[in-house]
Image (cartoon, rainbow, N blue to C red; front, side, top):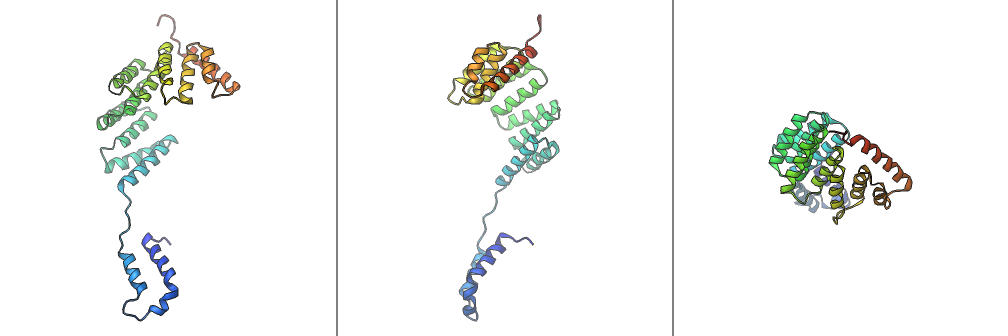
Length: 240
């Protein structure tokens, strides 16, 4: 049997006053009776809708990450039913459609999210949609256009650098990631991205040096092999 918070509060109060109750019965209004009435009338704090929506958004994001696309879509739509102007839920739906390879719908929803809130991560995601379709020029235009209004965005620069890698523009990727690695916020992930750029650009010694503080020799050797494979994969064919 389930109890409400009010019922549990009353039960606790009854328990703590049981020893004195026998002596108080029969009076005009016993102290313990008044206490119960006061407790019953005292308003309980309400859970805010914003708290519920934030929790549901987290559930949706977890479902999306786990590949439960139908559940994630339902979660995001539940939020949008109450808050049609939720940029985060709209962005979430855009990600669902990208995972389903429904690119047109994903772009449409991403544009809607941007209209609701001009967030660099939304622009970065729109670029990812184009990169996923191998439209790297289109993706790079999106990143560069967004950087004009969000010049300090790390996510936009990071995505631009990755787009340069998968389009075989390795020296440009090196420039991007070298600049990011000079920022105070640079961390192991930043160094790994710069090492990747060095590796695909056939600067193996620089890549190894960049990884040396974060990886074991075995891990470094593995990564260098991955970089070599990526270099062969993404180097444009002669004449293209």
